[in-house]
Image (cartoon, rainbow, N blue to C red; front, side):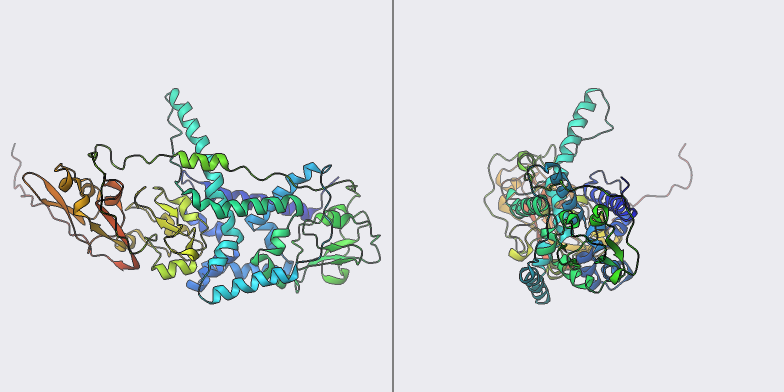
Length: 527
């Protein structure tokens, strides 16, 4: 039987939008231009609102569009544009394949006190200066972490397997890519949310969306005054209950012939199954005629619960990734370093302005983690404190910040990382270099090295005479930008002989001096 146009349109639009979001998070080949990210992520509610608070500009008004859309059409954002909402729909639909084992949906009373308490506490904590609960519960950020922690490693493993197979035939069109190394302890919260949301979507449809999600609750309040909404024609309704049995939001009370519009996500499932044409989408009080559809007998359909998504393989693969040597050909120390790096602050990515600004606006969506070509940006655990858990930081033991790259500043959807031109980024000091002489193998093993100086793009690290023919590093933190190339290149373990300590407030570095070659001009050809 034909599906109503409204539902066809929802399925098509949501599928395309969901696909674009997935590609934006899993684009490890960096095919998508940075400017596209602004368009794709513009209309996500919480990131857009935070960005507007920082930069009141047209590019940060996506949340206003969502509010206007909600007032006009109801909670269509949750079915059309919210990636976590679409993900729940997919899981719920997969669960429906087990209809013989699980009961159908049915009307349930809302958890009013719980849902509004979560929203109130989230707003209070945000107004007090912390976005910890926003980053923890924001559907866009939760979805971003799912992509980064669970799905991207699987895609990269498949890519690397294909690269190995292709290489056997001397075809190098597919090349190996390193998996982002994330400490296993960081997986605790994402695993909890993946399990919780997966289970609830299998068994109860949109229960998480309508009970826990603060964005859903807020938009639910606005939808109470929406112009267009789902409504029931009392004269036509025969109380068959098919609408309630297919409502994944559990918001249709067919006995009272009432629809809880604060929970309705305008999925249009009810329009498809009503045999009496008693349900319509339009102005309240049935000003518009009900949508005409052919009768579809879905009376025996049952929606399920299923299984929790398996993540052990992905986390195991991440754990199995061994850190490769920073610099090929660098001397290998024969003894371990002993002086611990005395770090005062974590290093937040360029464009973060300051730790205060960055922590206030970052929702830990992990988009910057995904787009970093050097994989130097990783989720934090204790570096920013409890409220900053999973927010990105620079890990220079694993990689370094590319001197010619601004991808993370280009794609940040919340304004936590402000856009920087390449010229500005090259003079933005996110941290300062520190040298620990007692860790350096030139001092401890009387051997040549200089890897840190060779890899410093600004020459803030340079070599000076030491003993005999040996030279040892010396630093100039005025021209250092804190890119971490020196720290990554340093071969000492477990503590580096040179490291970058983060700036609590990003500063302006001095331009490195460029020595001009003294070339004598020839007046005539010598031959």
